[in-house]
Length: 137
Length: 483
Image (tube, rainbow over all chains, first blue to last red; front, side, top):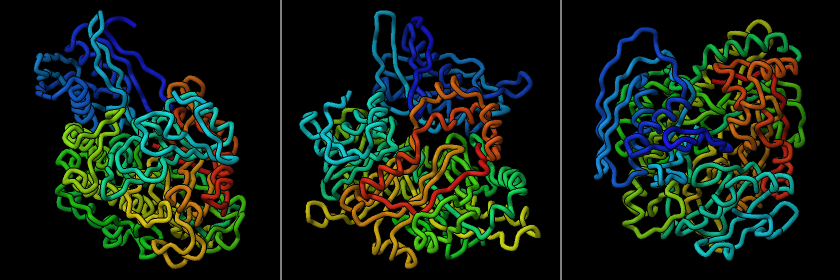
């Protein structure tokens, strides 16, 4: 696996991904890509998009990962919005600001119930950051 | 990882992981499995998750693991634990995101031979009337005020609208309403997710299934339940939809700092918890009750739609098309119950995740017509395979806190299932074997292939050998509707 990206992991009942990023912002960007790849929603025809800014804060990196993915999942399931581009900044004090260009979803894809804390640890590696995220599906 | 040598065999299908296995265990883990089911489980993290669950404060007896168990997140699927009210905890992750995911069984006087040529139309009508799929908009959009009433009333909310009968409520666990629901403990986001989804099946492993009563093992109990050999029945498997998922997510996040405040050490953050008697624990139980009641109402509305579909298709073709409720049980829930532990009566919170209540004969919580025989236990198999109707036993109270298995249990990951099985071929195979399939997603269908699950007959053999249930009837599927 490259120093930036995600891979699907086998899990008996649910879905899991291992995510790597060259820095924290990249880790959050790749985690979002992993979520969208698992859900696999279909964009509605047309190119209209809207800008959304998300501001999140958490006491630790793991909680911030869960909050971030929950926000994207909520946008998808409830607002039927798919991020077309994502720019993420994460401060050392774990304040995340994300600028999203979102478009409407024709279908919201596969069912995801929740993002879990199960076995979740954001660890620093020689190449950046790594985390494994389990989704309840 | 737990290895076979770490387990002590207590009986033909009963195993124990003693507290000496790991120093943070507070109670032993007791597992029901035959050799084959046990071997399969040693390949994943499920027993480690059961050991992790045994570290929760205030547990009594043992953590019980049912033969359909498999790896989940935090607490294993198929796990049961009981926590003392005085010093125990409640853990949202030990109940699961799909709060009160459960099964409802409806019986009929419709002979399969008379209805056989209408089964495809029935499958179409069920698929059309019962919205399924991801985040689907339901048949009953709600205002927030009305959603709050669903939270408080559960199935009784559907009864007020003519979508239920008094008999339906009597034949539902807790009469379709958990006490203590407080919608002020539920977040606006959970309400936003829940408002449009009432009366929907959802996706994943949720389904509607028409079955034939293939074999009766206990004629007296089958008669009490209205299960006639060779006649149709209907199963409904779903839960509290995005509403319950969000309630659990909210509290798993909210309780993260709370465990530190109460000085609770946990091996997995997904097991985050709060003392049952704490303000945080009470708030979670009040919100969980809202989600549980939402799920009862959801299955009730789906049952109403199913009845309409049966009437629409079968009127004029068969003499009786009505569907009568056999029972509705939860398999992801935390319940305050009275149990005898080491000879002493204790009030405990029983956490069941992928496990059902299975009270024995004489229990006051059962409706009068089941009190003599015990509680119906509904065990749906994997898609295309048999399902079972069992009865709870008096022994289950001592052996498993009045609990039993909830299904076949996965043995193959979703990715592996999709690599092994093609959805279109699976649908063809099932149709060739006399099972009509209606599914919104072929890849979702492949994920739920029978090959991805344990043998439900083996699971049922174990629970009957263990003495926590007895057989009533075996059901054979003839139509499956999935999201």
